[in-house]
Image (cartoon, rainbow, N blue to C red; front, side, top):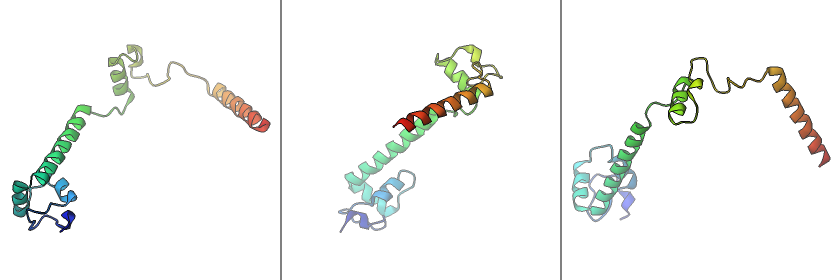
Length: 125
């Protein structure tokens, strides 16, 4: 009989638990039949152990990452700690690009010039 044909209830020791069920056992308690099968089948027991290790690694990584960087103050503190910016950027009014403001008119003129240059270059092709 095919290994994936069993969902976990009444599994003969000669067959294996379905892959999906083995993965679920990383978070769920096995049924009595599954527990018996896992006690006599090293292959299935090894798969459950692998899934348990994967879940443990995912939890560890989640805990290691900590709080997401969602605002400038938090991000700036992390960037300063990593030596990527100096402390002048961490004030409450500071933000990305705040020091290098370009006036709106200059930005629009630059964009227009780039569009014109691109249009001329495409027209020559």
